[in-house]
Length: 395
Ligand code: GLA
Picture 1 (cartoon, rainbow, N blue to C red):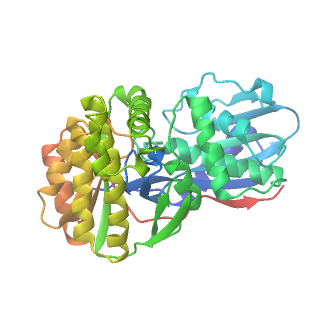
Picture 2: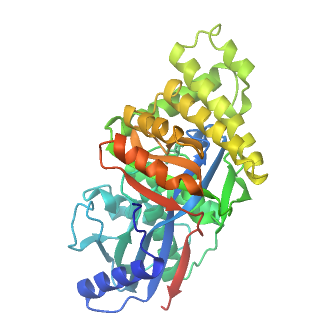
């Protein structure tokens, strides 16, 4: 009933086979970087807020080797990757790194352009991915982070930088080469996640706290709605701008500095109804996430679940980033006894929901959704997984 998640070993094997078939040599480097699901704290990383994601056993695996010259070559197995399985070649010199087709290659080029570890050689690489592309589980961040670590491996990381700085470099890659002004959450969790832990990230000062999550009686069920509305790209920058405008109107640096009382003052300051709603989501979500992390650490999952539902309602009503399909998935899940909470996760306008459910009730949730939601939903059961790593580097 749930999707089979390929093991790391299986992915390494597929990537190695693809590499051998394409380049007729053995790879010398293997890296992996996970996607993520955000448990709570949505659309507040760019408001200096708190987020509580965990890394998934869904990931990008990259195998390859350094080569001479200035031309890199990549091949990707993702069926959505628009160049199919033909290798895509490009010049790695800084001046030559430009945004172009195929789109997926821009994430790699963006990381090359923003790499902080010093000079690196050209390379051949094969990419295999188990994070559903465009499903709101950070397939792009996992490709960026895997690319960064691959460059570390083939360059010997001449200049050592912290994981947080690596996350910032990958975020900038996405801003500059994918035109997506994302926050820091996705790249951060992909690099810094720990096995069996969710991570509370304070996006204001980039500090982070592990929140143990290894209760065998509690399951995180991810449901892919299998829809992606075209608004997802255009609305994100608008939301980000509206939040900043609301904070500025209140004389604050970001929504993190604002209180619910401040939000009430916005009307008198001439803010639009839309700005007030956006600010109310941002401020209330920051409060909810901080509370949820404390409750989580105390294993008070029922209370966390209530906050997840409040988060969803706020994203639906105040932030306007949900959609009928996500709302239906949440409503269906919440009908089942044993479900503690459910919400949309990620940017919204399609993608996935995350449901926290007692282990005995998982099958019932899946059944409920399959019977009533007709867009071919996909289910993943995920445990908090380890962050990105270099698995092999023989140069
Ligand atoms: C996308 C962005 C993140 C974050 C989420 C919403 O995934 O990449 O930075 O803003 O949306 O929480």
